Length: 167
Image 1 (spheres, rainbow, N blue to C red):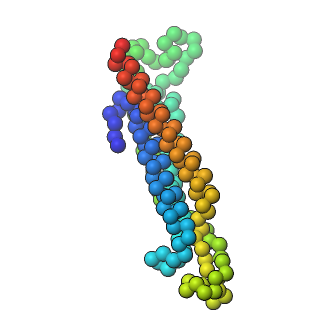
Image 2: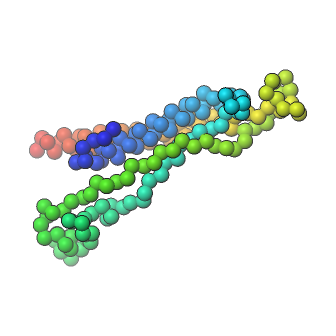
């Protein structure tokens, strides 16, 4: 969801909520397939997870006036060395959207002795899924808390914009 560039705080929160929703979808898929020993390709189900990457960018890199990087001064009242007119000050909104990739955990699952199972090997062992329910539940709780934190930040930004309109 793209929101007007004037409210880039809303964009950050909505991106975070979207990522956490995707993470919760994958976790629920993992839990649902935790006991699957044969998928369409004939192997045990492999755990899926999200890999989220973005360029490291800090606040100071986003400050510029007419393309010139600003430096903070502590001796002047304006606190900006190159700002003659505060109306020239702009904060660029060129934040990169994080790359979200679905990855497959290639670790082998546990081998369990079940000689009567049709998926058993010659020794009678069946390779189980590599999904650990406890780890998935912990990840689900963490994703839920992160989603709630992003939702709270989104609501705070909305309330701030609403309150500023009432001035």
